[in-house]
Length: 570
Image (tube, rainbow, N blue to C red; front, side):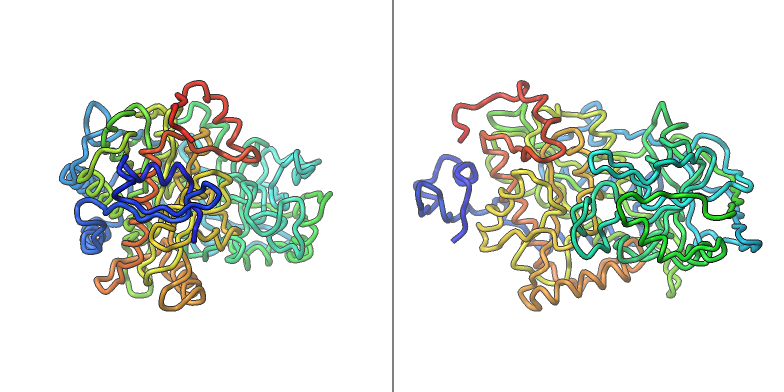
């Protein structure tokens, strides 16, 4: 038997527990419950497959923001939200929220070469390095920029760790390692073991170097600590880059940023008279001090086209029956990478079927079943977000410009990357969020005899790589829900193998395409669990909470007075 929270059990009752539910108690705690039928005939696999076949089709051109693919995608989601029975929840009573973005793209060739130890080596963009710029201006032109090795590029005063100690990197290009010092440690150190921290994220490394006045950063790519292959890095930088509009863009962004192949870095260190592996081990020890990479310098130049464009979040709502001013958000990002580099077969469209058309299909289907049933107490907001792949930008824009107050948003349930590789006994949430929603997800899964599994790959840092993170940073209790790993036919071993194969061969690549032979039982079961959880939260009188040791707890506490305390809350 699985424990259910009292609030979950009561929320699912709709006031009809005596006839609709069976509850066994132990010490006053509900132990099992028979859920009410899902309205509208339940979550339908054929509906999910139909949405997937459209959203991930070549006609949608990989769903890149500000392209014809976006127009088709936004039009499709808006139409399906309307047909599902939702009301428009965007700007001016429409279906969309306009998201103004700064767009930059490399215009023409990238010329780059490194000089070290008397040797000059050209660097090919896309093969040796993968660079970009979001800095204001018309391009990058660095000549003989000194190269500095700054370990993992981390300054963490609370951990007594500073890779920049004693370094002046102003006007220089910083070379840093991916992830954080504990990833390869035999025993957990100051960064808590293999689970990726915020300090290990590439976005943090860019931001810290910018705060130091660096001219650029090159992150050394390695597949295991990055959790994805070089192809993912290359494809992610092959097209336009985006950011929200920032008044401080000139200081927030580095003039040049990007990645360097592991083999290229090893050769660079050798030319500079250093041994890469030895320097890496040194960077993993407390008290590490970085320094110049010998006499190494970098020349790099490329033009950048910049303009301001508008993309769109798509927003539907189902107004609450009794507490309409309180909100539960269901979300997923609609964007992929558009048209990138051709793969071995010549296919260049990154269709983004698993990532993340699966979640948008679920979002539409959840709108349909919720609209077909009794209205929950709280308002449900269905949020299809743009530009996740460019840094959670649609979510960041929404948080900065919320359409419904964040203070009375009870929870954000973000969905990502359902697996078409068979039904699982479990469902997962990304990272270790230290939030009550993780327990609520376990209770919701138990209604169908499933369990919540902890994230099996904490070192990938998925908690910081999904749209819920933008809401969490604002204090809103939020999780990203993804597929489990324990396949009904294949077990955990089969689930792990399927996951590894996807990330190696399809993630952010043209191979992420819909196949009509997909087994939709898994996405159907996962969507059903999200329905159970959203229903419980939307009918509950309680407010989800961050644990006191969460970095987001204090931010939520600051708005406690703005949330009503309901007399029937447990």
